Image (cartoon, rainbow, N blue to C red):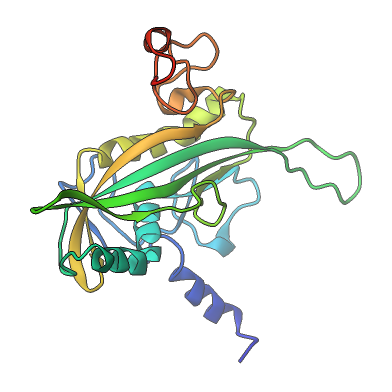
Length: 251
């Protein structure tokens, strides 16, 4: 049946969006609810809403960071199991698996609606997203073994949008208000392990976050890096001016 009623499509959609799969953090995340069925939340108020309930004036929608990571890992479930098999590792290895995340945040330019009466009001948008770059697991025989690596890390297919904001990327106040809670979630995940069922077995995951996708114009308060005049010199890594002055090749 091609044409499905809207409620059936909404239910099917829920299985693909963050907030569907149960998971747990050990220890529990600081200042983050232990509830796992959180879908789309309002970027400013933090209130949970369904797709249909959104007020027109909402300027930001996002997923909770940990729920979005879980959804992304479940998307890679087959890749993880195939990776274990291809490296001759036990399929029931429980981990800990180490997951490297690349974060990106960039302005999307003018997204104002150009139809209708009257002048087009310039409306800027900013998107915060992440990509799972690689996953490795520690093995008693050969140390750390990489079981998954993203072949096209810059492709939009593996880039998971997590937060959309109708704001200008130079509007630091709005960006800070919306990204602040998201960054707090990320910081608390650095000190905890995720417990998630992959292939029917509960496994543990640790996350390493790299802020390499921020463009140089965006004030990098997200990573504690400033823009122009910063002690940091590279937009692809955390090298400082001092380090680069001593060794420009391997900065």
